[in-house]
Image (tube, rainbow, N blue to C red; front, top):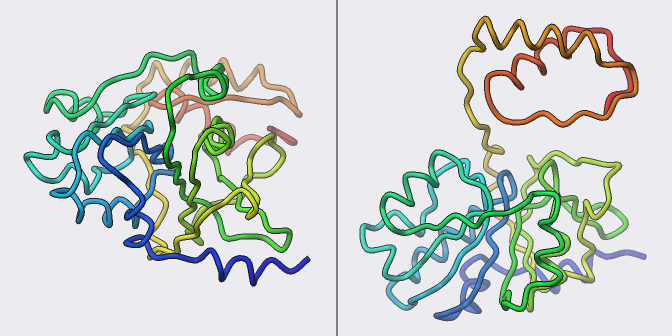
Length: 240
């Protein structure tokens, strides 16, 4: 099936998409690398029209446009599933809250929560020939958030890496109410300091114990960076 016609029908500007957001709404804003950009800038333009809009996401990689104004907290509130340094500063401003979670259960929180989710919007890779938008490296709970939401928008970015082999790592165009084509900014990265001698020593102990075919989960910080660097220099194969 050719999905290009449906794509054209669902194509909207960011300014059109944010017209659906009302005061008091819950809006999922993406997660880490999936956090919206064009829609964020468009929503910032509507600041004076809105109050008590509850935005939700996590691990912000850069400041949000909607919180650029000093009085942003009178209009928007950020609810974070996982804090970055940016979000900790937002808490100090009084415009954000931390939502304690067990990360592995986050999809279930969406499925079982009695709270509404009015709009969900995520940055995705361009649609493939089968009508799917890949969610990139931070898919974890986004498919369940999309199922929960009353309306789902995707913001296409050609720089989003396509990550295969997972479960619920894509959204089909049939699940999407609107498609936004932004300016394709580079995918943001969290900076990391140089690993310490202790980081390097632990990394050597860890990498020596990794077999070919292992499935790994690396966190954020100097030690995971050190481990990742040694893996890249190794001859390990078939890692997940």
